Length: 257
Picture 1: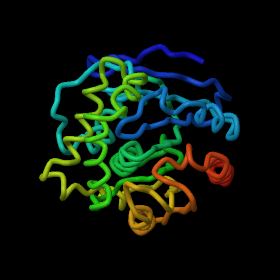
Picture 2: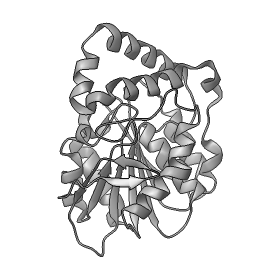
Picture 3: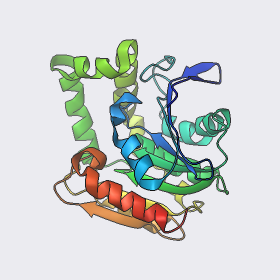
Picture 4: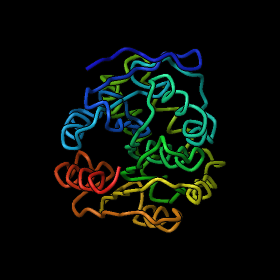
């Protein structure tokens, strides 16, 4: 494994690599709105072994040990990450073929990238708890997170993963989503250009979104998408139901990419 940072656009991007067969596509993990390299825990290692693939994890700028960014984040930050930043990261990492594995905001970024850069490099896309448009249930949960960060134990728990970036990571995400201008945020137009196979996974008890999100992915991707709805599962399928998620992704990738 290697944790050499990548230099992208003048910023240092924290990374972790997991070795694997060179002929297999690299699993590229795209974290949630409050995530980082370390918050994936051992899930990437387990998935890389199950799929027989190398892997790349990175913390977006403003998260983990990556360079900080100025706030506020633009309201189209996920579009910018998928359209402009992710291609530069894949280039800097020297990846010729990749499978995008995204969670929450990272899932949205994966879909934007696949829709704005269709082509042979992206062999498949796996999205867990994706956001394609804004739902009231999501905003309610994000409002509750602000209270937990300000007065509860959320800030010290996140600081273990983000260090000095903790306020940048939290408020950059929270204030963007709660900005009145964000209510019309919608990435469904990108789906019509996605050519890679897609697996969309959603927890039945997801506090940040409903099944309408994965239904939008299935309806919007021209070839359709394989979907998996997990009972007794919240917003983090890879943590709440790891064995089912590992089997589903490994089986999905065994069928093609």
